[in-house]
Length: 306
Image (cartoon, rainbow, N blue to C red; front, top):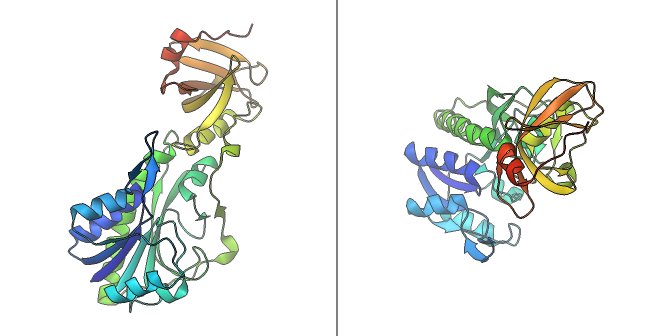
């Protein structure tokens, strides 16, 4: 099938790669414009662009989707199907309806739960034990299109958002491959979403970062996992702000929330509001590198509360 692909981050690369491996004619790729990266502000390609160039697939990076230029490109490419995976731009209806097979999306949740920009993060932040991917027809409204198929998977209780993203990228690629086959042979179904059951996964911001130790230890553990790799959970340790990258739920304690119970080779244990301890295992000081809590303590001794 002749397919126009639209995507930007690493999550989308797996789907694009699978389309290529399945032998489809990927006639072009739309991806976000190049952006400056790191301190040198050198312009960096998106992961999707990097992969597309290795396959000699034409790359297009329109700044706007509604000024007519993007539609003109789509019409000139004449795709039979548009596939979207984490593109980062909203497509107008005239583009969605250009291909004869329409436009489909690889969404990283089991819809209608977690519509929006950050479904993987919010599933973990909310302590979900399972999630998945949905292949759906795209509609004017965000993530409200009819479903072709879903694939579910369990979330490991210690799995962070980056690791889950990598797993769902591969699961999404497999589901996409099956969905395109169904479209080709005419067996693809359209199942309307139960709009009364939807939940929303808004964009992340730094207001979500501070750890509040009056909350239960498990919720804080989920907060740390859900905010990887950005914006990361943060806390103040001996008057210094640190990012927290990895934690574990510890044992019972009668200490007041926020009290430091232990600091040593097994990490830094802090009392939480539910009578459990949270063990800090990896962190990063401002201007420093990510390291184990044990290594951090070698240069930054932490006073254990009496």
